[in-house]
Image (cartoon, rainbow, N blue to C red; front, top):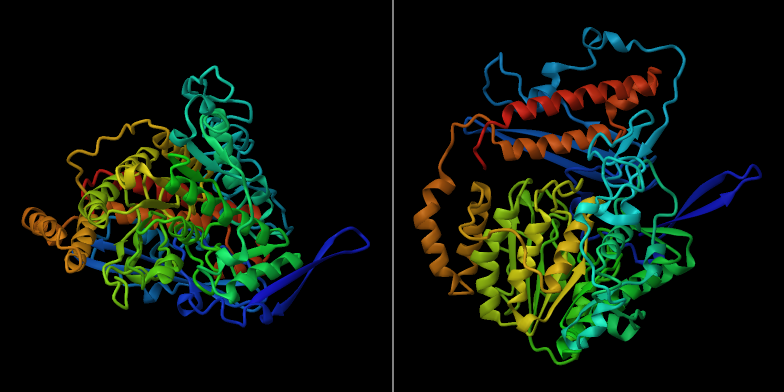
Length: 635
């Protein structure tokens, strides 16, 4: 179902929103693939995103303590009035055994240390008069901050950061015009260095400014993470580095044709997206928006990806990067969801096959599982889909992508899912999975073209992914995949919502496409315990379809099996603690309207009073985390 918002201007010049349901666009079926009609997001509740439509965001955090587990579950629901509530009954939370004198992070958040007690916050006595405190949203991570703070309390970015002008080369701590001159590359004197070499050895980049027009028309309680600034920050970084324009060949943009879309999507999806061009504002799901320019942006993104795939496969260019939005890997045969309208990677694979490619490999390293891409190709043996993503037993959005989802109808083994069991996953886990699973299967498959669904939301600092992959890690994974398909490699932008992380990571990937070598040492990579368990689980399943994996499984199980599955007496698993803390802090600092916040509003407590306690809790949690960081155990 699509919800349309019409904006009317009153006589005073104020914008008023009216809402009406438009079910004829999608037949009420666009949300059928959303598990339990809930969106599972650990680190950022996009609260109040859609008035008048009920949805839920489930946040689960699990910490291990002395071999036992305790779960902290939060259910944040949006009711029909667009008001969110937080259901977190401290009495229902299972606590692990602990010393009474040892105050843990979990204790800080639960009722044992109740910050609503008068004796804990006597410095913040509420006043009878409401005091309005101005706030600003961080341009880098979108988190909310109070007016008197100059740098974001979550990511540290300056409120007047120049990241949209200079990309990640701009100082995160200083205002607009401060650029780190030491990091600026030495560019060639040629005005267009890509013209000096033959086109067939060039790296192509697909970009069109019309894709910036796709945006959420009416900002809700929080800026939408999938915003035009994502492309602006990457483009600014590439321009500042002299990469594009400069060293890369630009691909002219065109809108994908209806016939090309029909190779991947049903008429239901095509019509639903096309109809949005006649609407001022609309929604496919509570967090998947569209405006009158969105259909054009989606067709431009798909057209660029299709043309890049054809050009790379035919040898007209060496490789390429599709700097496009909206993203695509959640868009399935019928439905648009997860910020995605058309599936860019699937359309690129289809275009390559139309150009003559027999086998196409899609590697999806976005932190979310590409359920749409899997659905489109789950019965195909000509397209191998490999995804690395957070899964956590189906609790992480979109809930699909378990290791035993291997394809169907004779194409078993042509869908390979590597699901991480927790957040905080780092370079070592990804590189290890590439060495043990991705590369052996890809070499056996021997693709004619390799496509990367390159979401950068597993990058360090991303507010939704909460993982720890660095630009060097992404560069290393790109270099590994460059050895396939004779170097015919297309990288397509998917997610990524921290501008500094996404721009630095994308730049590192494009540098590899241009021939630079990454700086990370991938020799003797040691994974985390949770990462090792995930890889072993995948190997055990996939070696039934790819016999070459059996040797890897046998070797790893004999050398690491006892380590991977042994119990531990370590009191805190720091990886889980960091993930849980990051989630809690993002919830606190985003100013989301939980049950306690609604209670305080009803009692007339001023905004500055609530925010003072949020900052205090932030500092205490950070201090406690640093105190626990001496634990060197990695789960």
